[in-house]
Image (cartoon, rainbow, N blue to C red; front, side, top):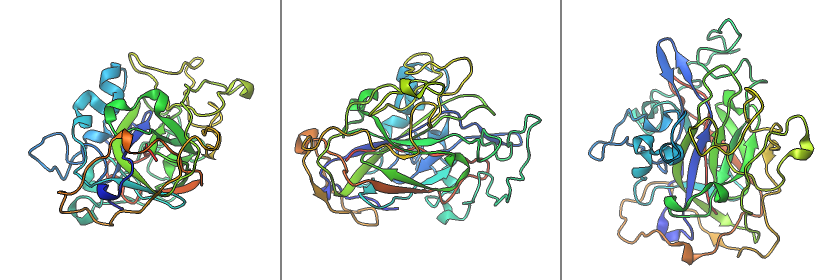
Length: 352
């Protein structure tokens, strides 16, 4: 995982992990998941005096909460604990980046030298997903909120061009990449356009909650000259694709007390796939015309966290105009470790 140095940074971005309903569990244990990286918020938990090797605040699901609480995972103050200076999720244009999907920091390479990492949420290989099923046929161990890989719903990355977390709004948080059926795959490959954020909405087999996980990101390499368009709320268009929202779309905000941005018929879940008009892979329709953003080159940062931050600063929005990665970028969420009591999906958001 590459950790970025702000001295090289033209623009800082936020990665927000969004997912809906990741109630993963093993016997007598509720399990959820987050995308782990040194660029994430509340990596060490939410005690400013403790670097918690077993932190799990970021994985807690969000369900029927007030907007001020679910937005940026403020309900447990996760958004108030940014990553250390110089720690970023680096998003290289035209290449891939690595995050780790787990239900607890202990099950990642960021704790205990990675010795508790696994393939699925319970730390086992589980060929054929033999961990058990409910009477309805749902996979229960680990609980992946699906009956099979074919029925697993899509996950998404989104992007926002703001270096201040308080400035990130639904309208400037744009989905740029979607991967169908990703929830069962530990190592997943995405294509990306620019900033990143991740999200997921399951379809049955559990409570329909939501996840939102902020990270700081840095896009490196050559960027394109087309800005990302403002995002519109997606609409449910499963039965009539002509009603799907065209162009840049927001993340899905669903099943909260307020702040929701989509309504679905009956109990149908607003999933990241053609049900809402999201294509599988890169979202090629999110950009404005050419010339709406300056082209830039941002060199990659070091592969280790800088130890001397005296010359590092976060540049303001005035340092550079919003821009996009015109060249489509493959994103590999290599979810190397997962949790022993958990498993499932990941998030992501970022800016170029």
